[in-house]
Length: 443
Image (cartoon, rainbow, N blue to C red; front, top):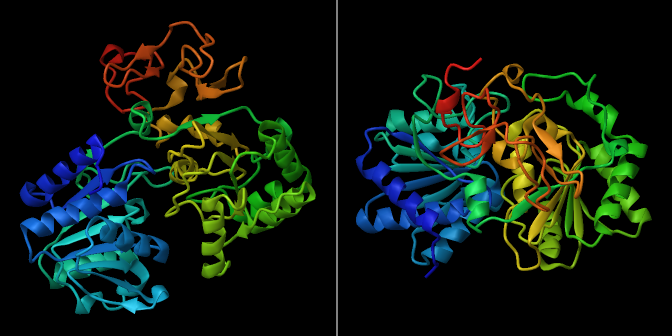
């Protein structure tokens, strides 16, 4: 029997209560990467079906890896579960009491199978607001042709790009109720997630994105490639990584383009590092082999382009080289979240951010769409660096959490909910979002 963590028990209890008693039909569960979301909804399904044996559950995901992972986790927790997979890429199209389905496979036949009591959506932040989107079509078809199901979304990043959170009372929000939430800092402080330590990087390794055009969601990819797929920048990144790690930490390079990724692969090879490259065109069997080799320690590093941001568990990962500038706080969180899992071989994960994303979004526990206009704050910057140990921390830290060096005077507002420091003119806490009562009305 798997031993659940206290917050996992809390989450399951809240989710069961939502399913059985809430008048709302659509709710969201927000938990950080590596906190065990799959374990939680597997236990939820088991508990509900044991209480209501006729219950039918559909689990939706956007990749076949997550579809398979969801079945595997449920079987590990509940070997007797009546579960099938509906995913063309996995060569299976089974409708059972519990079905783990690919969004892109089941959408074609969802009208034939509309009878679901509970729909669970993994990586729910990927559901776009447009009614014509694939997720929306599936959910609308189920509601139109079958009984109104309860819909529960799970995500580590409950917002889209620069826009606001995906739950709330507004008409354009799919999820009306926040069922349960735990923050990254809470789980790091309680020892359930690995500490992520960012350090200052070499300026020569940082691309100038000031003239890169911006689309609705992110930097324009062609422009971004022009300023990042540059040999001197790639060489500077590899040199800086070597200087800081001696190449001894299990590392994943997150490249900004395929062109830059190939440059990384070549540059690393000149130093004797054979780090396989994974892109969207890498054969699935080959990709699975690379990831297995990394997990087992047979290879020390990987290079990837937009492929290892979701659905990959990597406890050994001890260094993230992020060479991808982005304007998406969700994408940034998904990338760095790969390093949050605990492993006996490490006590922290090193983050080397060459995309200036920390300056753009702040440290991990503060990454979210902006709550306020910073022009009304004393501090315009989000982060600062400790002059003693080079650790990058929030500009509101009084002392460095790694070497205890004093960073600033006590000229901040402390949130009484989470104890985080904030600007003395902030109306809301940047970590937990609570109203800062002492600052009400300050301008």
